[in-house]
Amino acid sequence: MAGIRLDAVSKVYDGKYLAVDGVSLDVADGEFMVLLGPSGCGKTTLLRMIAGLEEVTAGELWFGRTLATGLAPKDRGVALVFQNGALYPNRTARENIMFPLRMAGEDPAAASEKAAGLARILRIDAALDRLPRTLSGGQRQRVAIGRAIVRRPKIFLMDEPLSNLDATMRTELRQEIGAMARDLKVTTVYVTHDQVEALTLADRITVMRDGRIEDVGTPDQVFNDPATAFAAGFLGTPRINLMSATVRVTAHHRVSLDFGAQAIQLPPIDRRSLILSSHDGAKVIVGARSDAFTPAADSGGPGQLSGRLRAIEFHGHQWVAFVECGIEMVNPDLVGLQRPSQAARRRIALDGTTRTRHAAPHGSGLSTRLSTIGTKAKARLGMAGLPPDAEAPTTPTHRRADLVLEIGAGSGLEPGGKVHLAVDTSRLHIFDESGHRVDRVTRAQPAERSGTRR
Ligand code: ATP
Image (cartoon, rainbow, N blue to C red; front, side, top):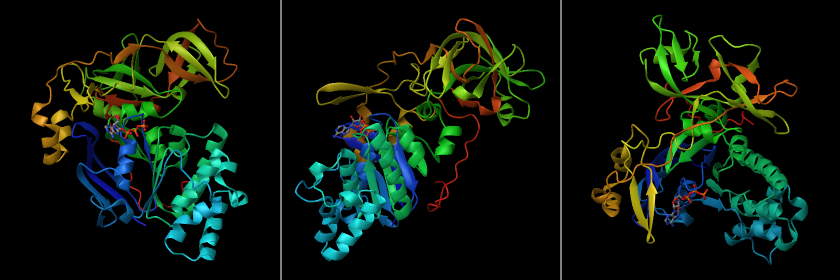
């Protein structure tokens, strides 16, 4: 077994395209780490670099105390499962799982015994003597997982292993994967863009965006105490409300969040009040999940907002209300991207096409971002020749939209009517304009998997 350390690891494809940008991350021995993020954020690239299938352009990769950056894939003790774990069609499930052991010269009876043990964990023991074509997609994927893990790799890597399965099978196999990881205590890195998989499986989640890390923490930390507005927006359904506000400080050092047409006051003892009290007039982004609001009987009070109920939707286990409050909302996907004045965007020719990417968020400018890449990579990238701020982003960062909140059945609220909302200020997350939390986010670094979370 081994932990994994990524030290300022970058990947530049074809000498031109920066896919992973100076990522530093520790995965503890036996930990289940989920890489979560939107399509194209660099999750698979990171996983493939750990597996040795992609060269690391800059930075170092460590497995325990071994520098693994230049190790051949076969010398890494790593097993990898993809979306479609290909099986040997003419071998039974048992023979497929045993195969790596047989190749390593293990005695057939012992190998068969180990395959049967794994099959029990993966709940395919009844299908062990069947050929792959007679198995369901979920069973085949279980066999592929069994085959990958049977030699007890030091590190187990999975790249969206459930994405080709139907919802029921996904849920089942997700539970089996969780049970297996718990039993075998193998260091696991699991790539997904599915927040439910991330929240249910992970010891810790790494939220990625645009080749970089936005947040790393336990599911509870990342969901309830997100480090950035993007991470807050990526987890949770409905998506978190991000409201544009201005800090107002009264003569008595009371802090209000001024949304324009209305405001809410933070309690004086709130630690954000202390931080914001010297920032009168500062622009902030206030995040509130849909369950941080409760319909109230009347307006007024320092912790209330009012608006017009535009629509109510039935979502099965909840009702979701859309309330027009005249508040400027911020799009989580765009927050933190460069504003026109700061935009240092790169145009990178790739296969004859022109791609444009946003540079780093406010406060970590392009030069800092590129400084994480070694000189060799810089030379290959031709950094000196990068285009200047040629184009400003054309998509507006802010939009006017509704507050989205959950309401109980039988609330009596009718679309078109006025609604007053009590806001649980303790559940507000306050970010600066670049999307970083104004207050400190605490993150414990777990040692070995304790097994207490599940
Ligand atoms: P997805 O969830 O869609 O698989 P991802 O987060 O795993 O996305 P990657 O596959 O790692 O993202 O890709 C990161 C970026 O690198 C993408 O913009 C992708 O287009 C680019 N990329 C990936 N492989 C190559 C390659 N071989 N050559 C050039 N660019 C690549």
